[in-house]
Length: 171
Image (cartoon, rainbow, N blue to C red; front, side, top):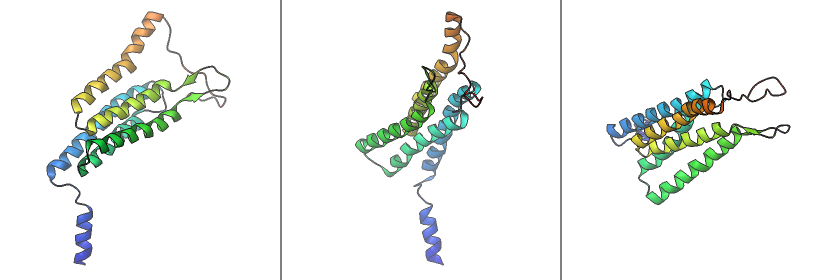
């Protein structure tokens, strides 16, 4: 029985001390907040990739950085981890871009770019660059929320909504 107890305790003791646990919590909460900030704008715009998607992408990217960092990998190895995160997010972004046969345009490009940028913010948070991540999130939010207000006033156009699909639902 003592062997089982010792094994269970050793399996759930990957933090060296309380400060390592606190760092993990702070970084993941920061990633959730910043991802949620960008996801909120997408959700309010009626896009399918909203708050939850952006929060998960940002936290996931941060976690993919935090775990290897906890094990003490080298900078060269961390570079490969970051490359893997970027490649993986590329597949998710590709899935958010829809090209219709009958139309000459693709939809979802801004959402895909937002997901990609959200992952980059998550990587920054995971590396402990919270200030950089915060500034980038504010800039991305400005591009997503404020820039369209100015561009509509300059061009005089209303925001363009994609045409409904054949089943009558919007994208």
